[in-house]
Length: 461
Ligand code: TYD
Ligand code: MG
Image (cartoon, rainbow, N blue to C red; front, side, top):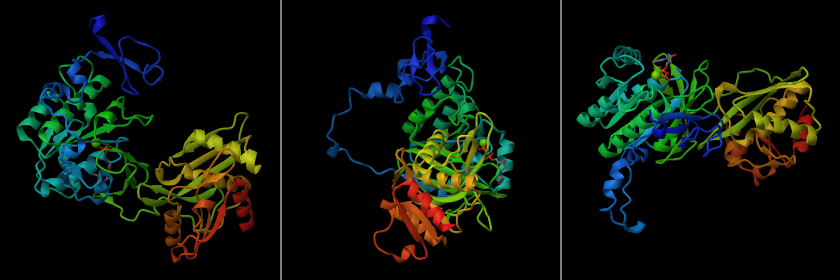
């Protein structure tokens, strides 16, 4: 490859550079630039040449004069999936589904595509990871031996595009995008350049034929969709599978959705016969202690529109010269910050202790409303004293030790009351102003500062 034809693409942000640099000029990440071939300008644009050829003929219109056609949605009939999609698959939409290997991506999509085929939609399942026989075996296992879903075991982009053109299915699943490669590119299958170009071509095909395309993507250990975060910009909807492969529960979260709300989640249980939706998931992320144990605090997190009760566990144990701080499902930097706040404002010192925290059930909690529960769990473990039975807490804690309100606090409290929780320590601004029977049975302690929260808890011993 001639030197001047080379282009370097960042695996993090997809930014490009004409020469190799240690640091990506777009996102400043280190050592992320890798070499790929130059693509023609049109390919770089997701509308490609279509854009160029339409340019002279398109009219400029005021927004009000443009007809706002509603999207044609096709519900998959799997309620939890439709919920994250914002009501169903959208015609011509491109969905990216990411997740760890073995988490259930192929299972869910096969169930969805079979349901759509049965409802009369034309479908296509392109499998690059598994042979047709393996897919057939899965369909038997899922209890659909008579499935009419057309399966194409193929990994070459041009052949896939040809089949899409010829059959014009309503929906096509590409399982997975990392296995697809194009002859036109010199880079190896699975490389960033390949994945990006193949996804761009498929996206264009989706827009021109009105086929809904679902791309399956693998997630690397670091949690990014292997190499190309770039795919996230190209597609309309990005869904991620979460959950512990050891537990039966799986969450699907919408990270981006041009056709619906983000952060909406769908909850599934992996059963003998595939994934089953869990319509009332609020209590599944609690471990089942019969009596309260030290180092455990339940919080109410808000996932999209649904409150979920999640148990936060902490273990504080005497550490070595450089004590460890580890977190599973929670942000580690935030943990370090909370420990500092705990020391400075509540006089709870963990400097010489190892601190481990975990969100039970493999959920990932990114909202700061978990702060108070994390801090109370840590203190409880340190003191060796359990929090009272039926106790919940939530609220963000700031560097000055102030407890800040969580969004939609009352909905969270209502959910806790509904599930029989009896004691709540919450930010003052989240406490209900007037009594409401939705909170019946729940004693609410509003707090403004972390010291106050500690005092309340000590008073409950
Ligand atoms: P799969 O959909 O192949 O995962 P992915 O495509 O994300 O890699 O899921 C595979 C796992 O799910 C495998 O460990 C077996 C399990 N499984 C069930 O428990 N029940 C089922 O009915 C099916 C089809 C799979
Ligand atoms: Mg798979």
